[in-house]
Image (cartoon, rainbow, N blue to C red; front, side, top):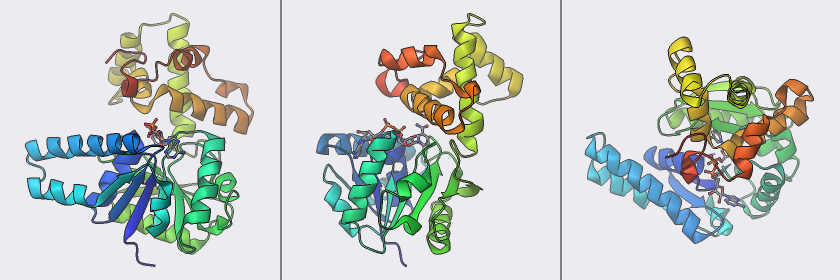
Length: 282
Ligand code: NAD
């Protein structure tokens, strides 16, 4: 199958990053969100990123215009009817994603492949919400998408070889290196990363260190490019909590219980960089 048009569901930080990289690779892109305004906000973020790239001399003004002209941003999910591959990147919530997969399955071309950027939710479960479970694949990009090289690929129990190979090839065309993970909660990256971030919240809650001490400790002591609390703010604390809940319920081990201080931040609406306040203020 030749891929011409890629759909992206969700125009948040991951969705707009995926849409940008797909358009920069030369694909036509349809990016949707719940409303036209949210979709346009995502397009605005792409424009801002590209403007910075022009000012740094990385791309030309013509390149920027060409990329933007390939992206349609809308609140209408039906715009995905013309897509060959649809990548779901909406909020990390099982019921929401199941509903989106049901909708996409009903409206998409029969041969279209449905991928998901979920950080932790079962690909097999989302596949079972559709009548094309063999054509559902996990395609886990990292944040920020235009910069991070990895795409973690996950095959659900019913995913067929052809769909998996096509998503692998697409990821590589988009300039990414792929790894393969089995379909278990958190896959590989978040199975290891999220318990570390959660433990950083316990360290903070128990008064063992201030945020700056915890982050500097891991940056300079372990050579991490960012401290775990600053990284949590970048990922989004709501996303971190959802992933911990999936690890906790899916693996059933008390070691994955979400830190109450992480829960409190989410209750307060302190979700990180995307809303101006998380562990730190922005
Ligand atoms: P975000 O909060 O920035 O964006 C989510 C977007 O989804 C919002 O714009 C929201 O309006 C939209 N949305 C909600 N319901 C929708 C619907 N029914 N239809 C269309 N759009 C809808 O979150 P994000 O960080 O972009 O995360 C999106 C997905 O990517 C999640 O599954 C998350 O686990 C995954 N992910 C996140 C990161 C990260 O570092 N943040 C990394 C890898 C994967």
